Image (cartoon, rainbow, N blue to C red; front, side, top):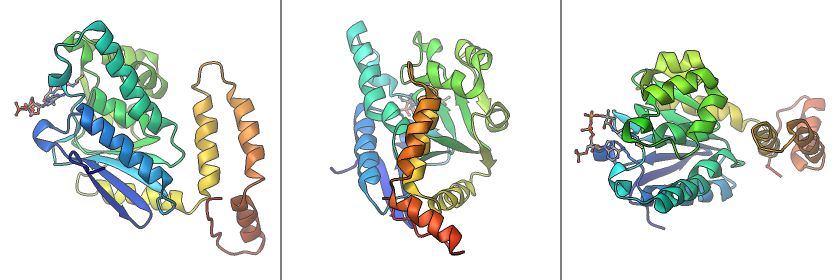
Length: 260
Ligand code: COA
C-alpha cells in the first residue's frame, strides 16, 4: 500500500509514523485512518520493530480531529458506521496492539486527535500542545472512544467538564491530570520519546505484550483483570524470553530477548 497521508520511518527498532496533512492540521480523514491501520499492522508484524511512535507533521498540530468536511452531511446510520469502523480499524486496534505505541503529541490534539493519543499506550507532549474533545461544540459527542478513555485516564469529573465545556487544556494541565506522562520542548519531543522507547526495548517483547493484555483487561467489560493477569503470568513461563531473562540474571549478563 502506498501511503499518501502518513510518513513512515523504521530506525533502531522504532517505527515512527507521522500523520502528514499539515495544511489540514493533520485531520483524520477516512484514507488516513486506513493508512494508519495498515502502517501500524505492518509495524506490529515486523520483528525488527519494538516500539511505535505516532506524531504529527508540522509545528502546529498532532491531529486537529476527525475531518469535519467528510461527515458534515452524514445520516444517523452513517454516523454510527463512522464511529464503529474507526474504533475497530484504529482506536481499539492500537489500544490492544501487542507492540507498545507512544503518542508524541506535538501540538493540537483535538477530538479524534486526542482520542488517537488516548488509544496509544501512553502519551508524551510538547509544551505547546493543546488537548480537548470539542465535539459538543459541533453538536456531536466523541465517537472514537473519547467518552470512555478520557474518564479512565483523568477521572470522571474532569472528563465531564472537558467534554461538556468543549474546552482545551495545555500540556502542563494535561500533565497534572495524568493525561500525558511527560512534557518536553517541541524541539526535544521526538528525542525524548525515543529515549523512553529504547528503555522499553531492553525488555522482553513477549512479557510487554502480556502486560498490555493484563492492564487492558481492567477496562474490558465483563473481564476480571486479576484472572487475566494470572493467565498471562503463567503464559510467560512458556516463553524463550523468560528462559533468557532469568538465565541472564543468574549468569550476571545482559538479556538478549528475541521476543518468542
Ligand atoms: N477537520 C477538517 N479540517 C480541519 C480540521 C478538522 N478537524 N481542523 C482544522 N482543519 C483545517 C481548517 O479547515 C483549515 O483548512 P483551510 O485552510 O482549507 O480552511 C486548516 O485546517 C487550518 O485550520 P484553521 O482553523 O485555519 O487554523 P487555526 O489556527 O485558526 O485554528 C484550530 C486551529 C485547531 C483551533 C481549528 O482548526 C479547529 O477548531 N479545528 C477543529 C477542531 C475540532 O473541532 N475537532 C474535532 C472534530 S470532531
